Image 1 (cartoon, rainbow, N blue to C red):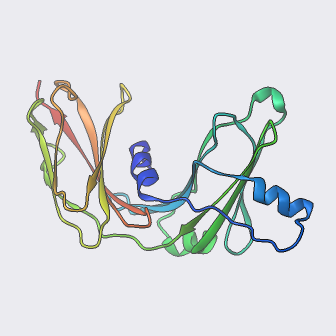
Image 2: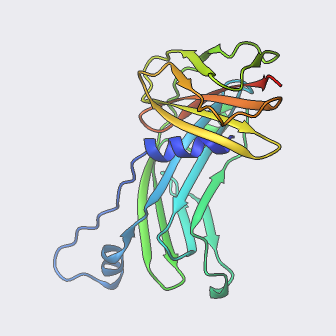
Length: 236
């Protein structure tokens, strides 16, 4: 959906490591699994755009300094839902991934394609280092925030002293606020505590006479996000 969702999701989700416990002497496969490192980031979450009424599942993965030559994600029903392999070592692999599903308005179809449960991540760098991790996907979404300020999309706002405001949403873990100017690709992202109902835009960020997109996301404890979006234009 929106790139400024990323910081919120990474902060809200915790990555767990697959631990292999063996008795007696380990075999080769067990020894390799035990030697694997935890992904710095390996998450899956659900996003809803309440304004457009669509949904998507997002996978985010980061390796260490070395790029990943291979990456696999296996769903709870044992289907492989992500499979990446670099063509050869000359590419140095890829360090960071963000995979987004299509964005259907039919949540039932998306739930069937990406069921709830534990998703298993595994990867290998071009130098042979193994990485593993897990992330639990739920389909629980928070309600959507109701924007109080700015007002309708036709309204103009001051360049300085702008404070955004919204009505509280029950059961959220945090809020994600994003402001983006599409033409210049300038954006601001803030992750706020659940008690927040406003955000003061730093003076100097907004330029006069420009149209911005604003998104306020209600984030659950599992990292799922429900966004509402609007636009506003600054005074010249």
